[in-house]
Length: 101
Image (cartoon, rainbow, N blue to C red; front, side, top):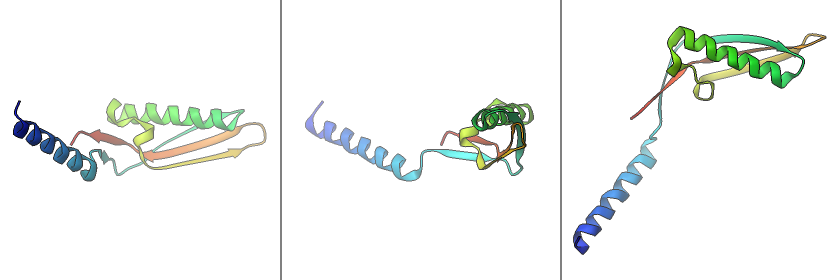
């Protein structure tokens, strides 16, 4: 490979890297409606985790597996309250789908 070919290849790679870095290579498509789930538990963290697990199940049942990923959901909220003998947690979020650009 000649020096000019190698330089052109490096330049093209640099342009692609800058394009992906500035274009936000991650894209999400989100539903407009919320999915809500609730759970109870003796520990707040356990109740919250269970509620998120139930949210995932409900989102999967409604929209399919690709829409059921809690970490990429939009407009997430979590509310946990002590009821006197256990924590009661409600989570809600809009399911999102990762779209490859």
